[in-house]
Amino acid sequence: MKTGHWKEEPEEKDYPAAFNYLSLLTDSREAKKIVKAMKRRSRVEHFMAKDLLRASGLPHLGDDDHEVIKNLNKVKSGEKLSPVLLVPGAPLWVGDGYHRICASYHLNEDEVIPCRTVDRIITAR
Image (cartoon, rainbow, N blue to C red; front, side, top):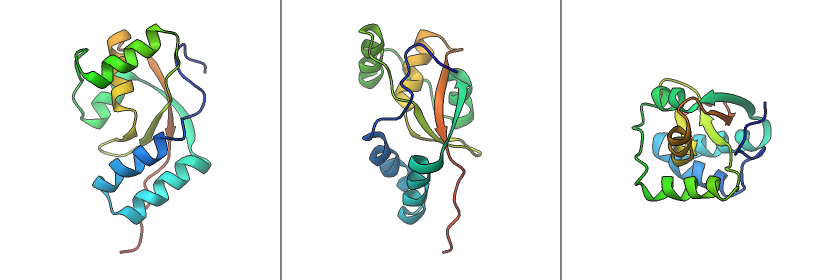
């Protein structure tokens, strides 16, 4: 499924950003395994912006947020956004792309967003 202002593949810089965030939610070994799996064997799935926000429990950022503005300006200039990196579960972990989700919500809450997903990996502790 193609979407209007989205790239096919995440940018390389998205993975370290996902690691930084995910290592706040789990230990760094597990975060590293999750990010490695995102690069190698993640599924591409498509979800609406409003559903991603609901499942993550994250608040919808206003159109005055600096990063949301940057992403809205990219879309307005014809630049495509990088897919979102997700770890499904309750709650949904948005490894990278929260501001892109919020920007898309401002354009259309039913915007279908390409997401790279990988299941949570449980490491022996």
